[in-house]
Amino acid sequence: MTRRTAPILLSCLLCASCSLDPFEPTLAGDRDAATGRDAAAADASASADAGPDAAMGTGDGGGMDAGGELVDAGPDAGSDAGTDAGFDACVVGTETCNGADDDCDGNVDEDSDVACTNACGDSGFQRCVGGTLAACDAVTVRPDSCNGLDDDCDGMVDEDGGCRCPVVQYMGHAYQFCTTRERWDQAEVSCTRDGYHLVTIDDRAENDFVRDEARSRRDEDWWIGYTDDRMEGTFEWVSGSTSTFTNWALGQPDNSGFNADCTEMINGTLSPGVRGEWNDATCNTNQSYVCESP
Image 1 (cartoon, rainbow, N blue to C red):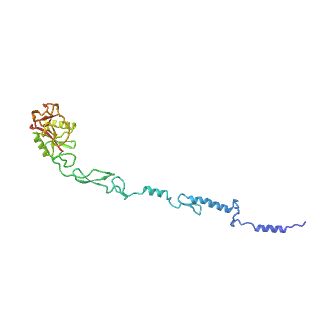
Image 2 (tube, rainbow, N blue to C red):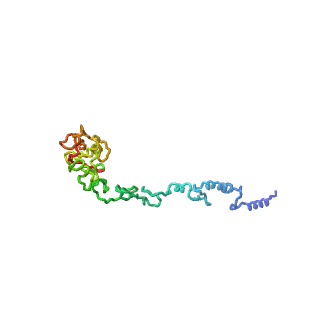
Image 3 (tube, rainbow, N blue to C red):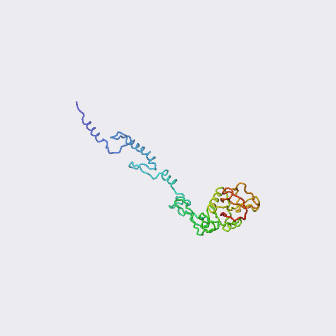
């Protein structure tokens, strides 16, 4: 039998010359020699994978770079920037004494002192200290004098005024306890010279105060500012007060002798009645008296 070997050898050589170059580009439908995957399909899959990242990014509008790294496009307009703009921005206002920077200039409570006047009308300022206004710093240089007023604005009346009689402070008023005996009308004149009147007693506490202070100075009855001299039986305070408090002793007032128009506070050891109670007496009796400032 005759063998046909030459055509077969030629076919093999032709086949070998047609083998694929592994480094040449692949076309759609070709398969990766290592993975067996279609190359074009793999490229499409990679693009699909990058798509969600590009859309989602980092929440800042970023995406993937050419090398596959995430890229931050900038601050998130809806997060930090929005928070700062909404809550941290200083709103300019008027500076007041409150421990805060109201006018947004970087300083706290500057120029927040407040002008003021004291009880005597002197001008000063309430200084801002630690976010709180201090007391008015107005200074009064007037000396105290005996006139029924608080000349030096220290909250006390005539304490250094050189009054004729000892001065005692009570509930914002000054009381002179005068042991120089005078008739009721003379006593009232002496009081008014200093800007006072014979004492007006408004309640039990004040009555007890006057009783005790007077008793500590002289054991006798003392004139007070209650009289019915203008109309018998209708008593009124010489100061013009409308106080309705009274503390008459039992059976008083009785207009004894038909001319008992002035009121005394019983305070003597030998006097009838209870200490601190009142009695209507003859106005021309000389005895101690109590003056009160307005």
